[in-house]
Length: 201
Image (tube, rainbow, N blue to C red):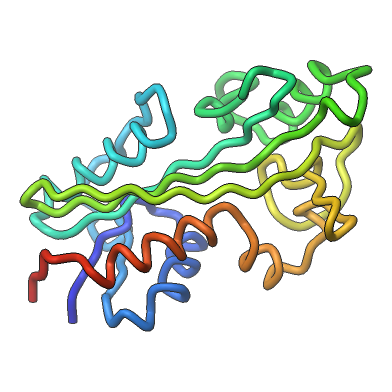
């Protein structure tokens, strides 16, 4: 079976990748299977740069195909912020509650029509030979004035989808996983992997 290393130790993310990519017959493992590998700082200035940095590093260190992703929230009124800084928007140590509080403070009094936002995800696949592929997915919505819902993580409680009348944190997980930015990027990367010329037993 062909193997891809996901440049993450997040087991929830691993399960999500495995579920969608299973029909391709690839074995998807995470960095948890390679405890000797270091954590890779996200020092890029864009989602694509961070995804490529992680995938390139893991491909180089393992000699296997590597896959990595980076995601962020882009708010039009804030010029696309927090963007690549989404996880650390309110500073270190990172905190979902602090990030949401800062976001809502910056949008205080901003009218509904100017609160448009999107979640964006970029996935990179890199082979040891240096073949590189990128895929992107996005989902559009608005930022509420107050959090709603108990599910999800990050900015999910304030990210509202008009077509569902709910935030990401209020949606059933099976629906969120079908329509999310990561799911859409994964659907694109699935097409890339199905035609990937590099193969290793």
